[in-house]
Length: 309
Ligand SMILES: Cc1cc2nc3c(=O)[nH]c(=O)nc-3n(C[C@H](O)[C@H](O)[C@H](O)COP(=O)(O)O)c2cc1C
Image 1: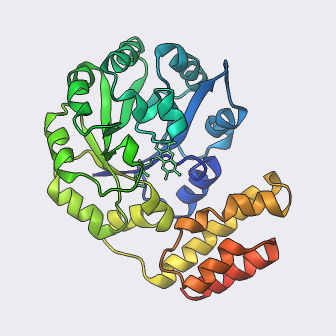
Image 2: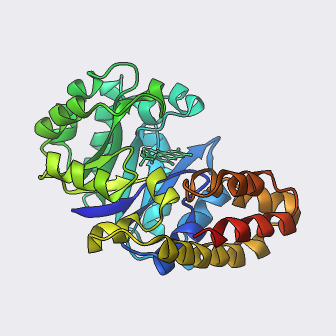
């Protein structure tokens, strides 16, 4: 199976992807957080995130979010202009603001909108499109009406995160519904959702041996070695993991420090990584990292935390 890194707004931007690939590796493809076209423009931040000069990973897939072809076209033009021939379409985002605009999972109750997007897809044979979706927005049967539309579209694969949009990340993933989807989907399928360990990945592979791959999100933020552990079939020791996390953290700091001004910007970028990273770290150390108010306090707390590995 292939192993993909999931898009996570605010986390898996270019700097994180570059550093992750250089220090840990083990990933067959990185997906960018979604790019959007809003108020007649594309945010500079999103443009920078896919610019070639800012990306050193080769296997990068830009993701777009759009409710209709008019919103999608400017994004496709930008992506083609940067020389990418891959595009992933977000039909899974559960941020209420996006869903209200019929973006992400907000598209799933509207087969006619999905059909419009798939018509646009068919008009770009030079691009290899994929879709990342949930079972539905409000009901776990919504995907069933979309299946003929998606099956007829020229897609490279479909990634399924078997939850509903309205559930965000709370309820357990619905493995039975995933099984139905996996059987009905004629495109190669990628599984996504709650894979946090090598044992989780192996279990899903055994259950669904025909998967094209799996996509790791928060599990990869927590244990950035998960991809390489799957490839080698061996979990890293605590000492190995601690050492590599230190390297990745230092590289992230080196890259981010010149871009972020002052304590506040720096801490508000770095601290959220620790909401996920190394969940087994001593609670006391983790708390000190998350509460740090200066870079010095932050670094001391990170050093203390990593010393336990
Ligand atoms: C903070 C955050 C940001 C996310 N941003 C995106 C995004 O930009 N595009 C997308 O398709 N999914 C996004 N997701 C969903 C993840 O890609 C993934 O589908 C979800 O977290 C389930 O997988 P996991 O359990 O491996 O994390 C986001 C999730 C989180 C928690």
